[in-house]
Image 1 (cartoon, rainbow, N blue to C red):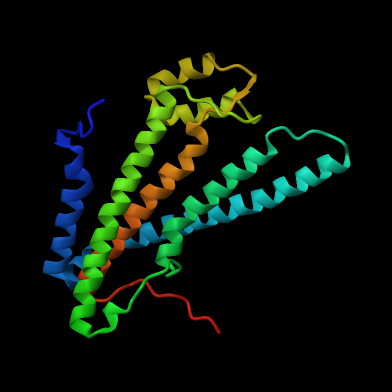
Image 2 (image 1 turned 60 degrees about the vertical axis):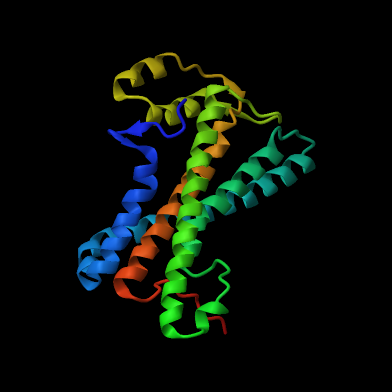
Length: 237
């Protein structure tokens, strides 16, 4: 597997780094005009971030339900196989799905000592920090997806006692195959429960890191177009 294989005729690094950087330069050059052009895209992205935050909240509730189920199983002298693993998967999903939404709400820790020197320095230092964060998050997202792909190629399975139904694996496999193969996938799907493949709990990590990278590039373009950071922490009283 080539490390930076072409995608639609262009190397992957062009899609991940060059094109977003050119978009950022366009926003810096055009300013308010770029903001008007990108406003519909920003609204859609904001909805996606909120949906990811809501999904993270659902997984947090799932952790609570798993704890309650463990308590009931213990009181009933029953065995809840894989409960610890399921709770760990839900906790990881909560963390990664919440990354982008937390960023947009100013929930991440940001050290602003140097940003407060003066207004001009603050703007350019903020741009530099956002750009470095965007590149770092993009690398993180790329290798998260690569880890997902390698786990599927190796057919790596969990070492715990957690199981998942085969139909669930087929459902997620549909997104990695063309529609022409969907019928064959479901025809080969049984009704058994199998050990959880590692790529399944890794999916929230891949999706969450991709959303975080998109969110940082997004708010970098907003910073350059509007000349002011759009990440505002909520005031606590």
